[in-house]
Image 1 (cartoon, one colour):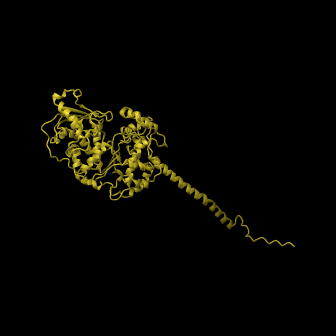
Image 2: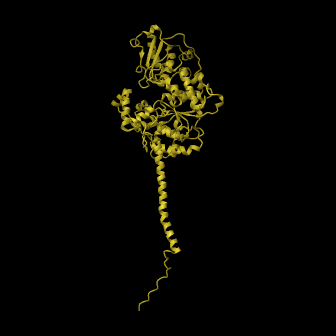
Image 3: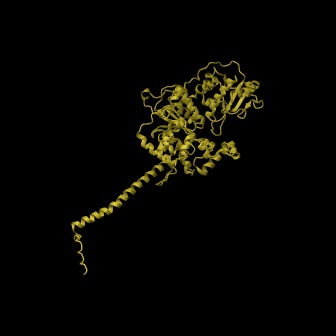
Length: 561
């Protein structure tokens, strides 16, 4: 007999559609159904916000000329009062000139975040200080223990090539050789350069009478050759000496052996070019001291340059700094002459940066800066016009690759590389920065990286009015003299190419006159290249640490030593 079926389990009666229980049940179901998509929506909004901020940061680093526009323009862009965004550059962009790409965008974006986060933190304590060993230097080149000879073996003329810095080195070498050969120096002449395009002569840049008077105890100096020698054909008699006749950085013995006999025979020798034609070692101490005496004491800028240089320094500091040996040498009686003493405590520090990134340097370096085939063709065309010898060497000789040159630290730092260094060392977003140099290769496209991270950038063109700049227009050497004054007077100076004679001369002035209070940053480009090779993957903390990694007993600026 089959078993009886068990009764079904008792269940609560179904709730009616209008009952309170049914209403609560429906509400709970709706809440559970909404909770999941609402969470997904929040996560989606957060991710979208992250990508939006990331896009915004990268777009800020992009040059304005290449940044996408979201509104129509009815008028061309206005020129601003800035050398980084001049009317000529805007016009060039409008005519379709290729924008120069910015390198290292990943690191630049990280630097922007890091600078924003560090805005309220204190600067590194040694940021504006010179390493301890620099305070041990004691100026001594003004001391003499000899007299100028009353007799002379003849006259030395030099026609110096290059820009103001090469010419300055040539002048001091000529003074030293004149003493070595017991010769009378004729005030140097400057050759016209198709790169610098400046017709300035010695008297347009330096005070002739002061130069002659200051060096009178050392050598005899005259403004012109004696009449009886002016009509001589110097090339015909063998008195014309060019750079192929005397090797670069020749020892003093070479001049005694090769040049002195010509001088004794013809009474005059004319050096043409004369670029870096005297060694630094070995050289007798007294001759080296004389060369330094010429550079640090005898060469003073003319009053026109001193007066405008004083304006630059005053506007950079917010007042004219107290009179010091450096200011006295650079500015003469224009030093300490301006703002009433009541405002002199309102000093502002500034960093001067020499960006040696003009097209001549970029072309001559044979390096690559991310511009593709257009960049290579542009620089090759420039080399053919201005450096034909280099073009010929490139055609006939296998030269190192651009990648090898960069890995060996042989390439000038681009603006974006320089600004990454400043950020890693600890210079704040609001640091006042004076940019020295001529027109940067790439113009405002290249300068965008610096101006985004450090907006308080000035140049001589932004600090001086058009009327104040007018006397110097078309005179690149005189404009470089203004940069020299601003850089030498800065609270800190950063060079981007240790091989630059301008930067080396500025550093020498700061060491000689600074008393250990004027730090100079020298990039070790080879070490830097080994760090930047990982620019796509490296994080900012690692980059910052590697730049500043150093035992505590040494200078903070190991990378720049």
